[in-house]
Length: 149
Image 1 (cartoon, rainbow, N blue to C red):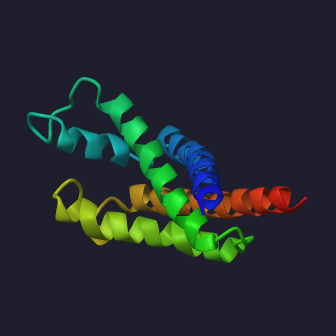
Image 2: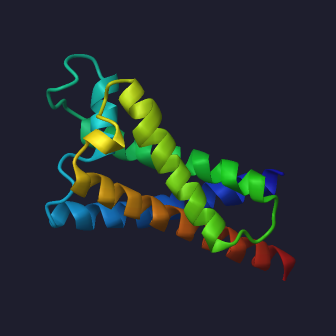
């Protein structure tokens, strides 16, 4: 179980990096607006939730990678050393997006729910979560194969 957890953390970090590349591309294309991890970090820092704060970008990046590592660890444990199929990873990534951006993020009044947020931002975020899930499944499959060899 420890190996599955560690592999999940490693896969989650790698998958978060791939997802972040999608977010940066969306940002450069003018589709993202403010990055959700930064908005989430801003909400937890003292002061107004609406005003930019010093360090929110760095804190948002650290929290984003921490969350990605944590959800990767969960997937690693659930996969139990097996090679998860890519469609399962995609479904997992989209489930994280839905639970986050239709659930706890609007529940904490950080951002509006998916259906009331910017369509372009949510398209980028959904695509990023598809990339996250795909990368996570492929990374865990590779680590599972390497452990058997």
